[in-house]
Image (cartoon, rainbow, N blue to C red):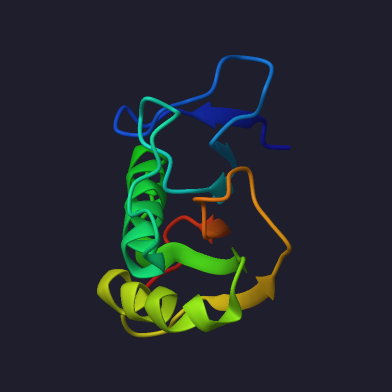
Length: 134
């Protein structure tokens, strides 16, 4: 049985212990917490008012965490995207095309009433299987 391994990517801020982990690897499976466009100061929201810019920040964080875990973006199997406005999906899809090619991950898009801050337009969580991508 594989044990959990907490993965830390130096480029992605971690909240203090006792809150959550950004990335956990169990065997070849990598679980990623929901990421927002919060900067590494854990306060500033990057890309305010622009879902495309926020999505690029988030996909960058996912990429850094996956690389720290020994995986790639092409290894992402599934993701859930939470948006506060369904119309923002066009910006999210545009950003996705900059980070993924070939087989895109299975995805769920959900509109929610709100996220951690009114300036946060979306949050994305993902799971990957290391070595499974094309």
